[in-house]
Image 1 (cartoon, rainbow, N blue to C red):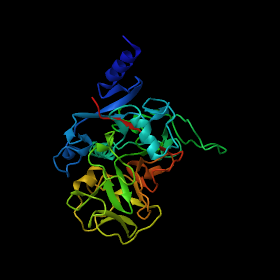
Image 2: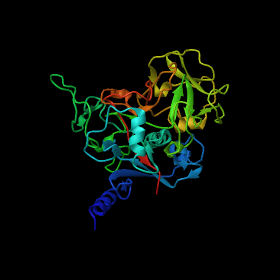
Image 3: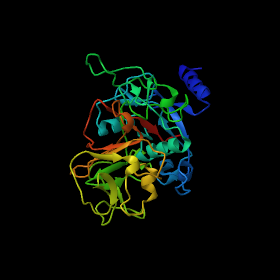
Length: 351
């Protein structure tokens, strides 16, 4: 039996099959978490009983999809999910996407829909993960620490990034050894299939950003805006949904009254509907609260005034403290931005 077969069987046996090992097109392994198909109502009981968009690809439902168990590293231009590694960082959105797609067909950067599904699962199941959000430890549980791989160089030094999966089980999405690691803190994670263009919410439908043919360039016609009833339309169509900043809270609107080329935030749980009916898709993507309780102190940060689209980073990083978490979103930066606190993870939608 090959070393790969031994590795794969060990990972699957130890996790009861919830973890597996997938090879890319040059035969290099990544440890992946297997996510079976869910209805949105199973992820939050206020949502309709339709298949969550994270399990829809090119109008076909997937019985299961795979997400990296660990924040990714990059080897020879390709993304990999492996334990006890220093996560990739200082990478812009396009390079993160390229490192994922370089692995072969049906590999891609984590879809916003998939992140949203996982966040809703955590909340419903009472396993909101903790993590490296306070210089190597969790802000509410300072005895919980990961293994340092980078610090700030001060005297004394303060931990920044920790090794992938090196924290306790409470840092995994299901609070168990087989869970998805480091969704709260460590490094912020670029996601695909979502952007905000001068306040207008735009998406690549379902998980179609995983297709190699999906064009997410600035001028792409694949981007769709959203009407109040959930209908997808061309960006710039009258009355599409937008983010307005009203009384220091991000508020859904059809017309923006307070636009600013700056980073402004509120607690995710405090976002307002502006008197509009919130379409289910925004709740499925976890870019608007699905209900009124059970969230932590996660921030929703946004620039709704820049002329260039803003792309999402999720989860928070090592010094976001209580503002980090699975419902944290940071939509201040353009796709060209890179920083030591910014990384990513890949997903796989093949068989």
